[in-house]
Length: 83
Image 1 (tube, one colour):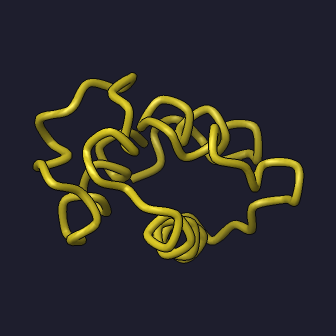
Image 2: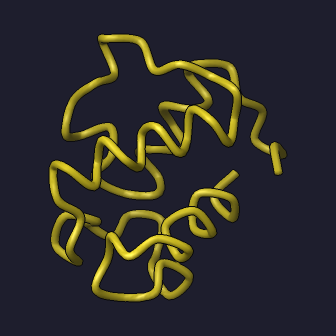
């Protein structure tokens, strides 16, 4: 799952660094993620994993790192081995 998240981030221009070089707990906002890009990221994740983020997860902290995104996806029901 983290690999898929990194790929989505790497294929975008949302970050100032290559997401493939980041640790799971690296602060995405510190490396360039904006509030607008967060919305685009959320939509890309919803499409990639065929899910919808519930309102309770629509907060800055959910998208602050690859690890927190993976935790939110797992909470929604996405399997860890999802490609």
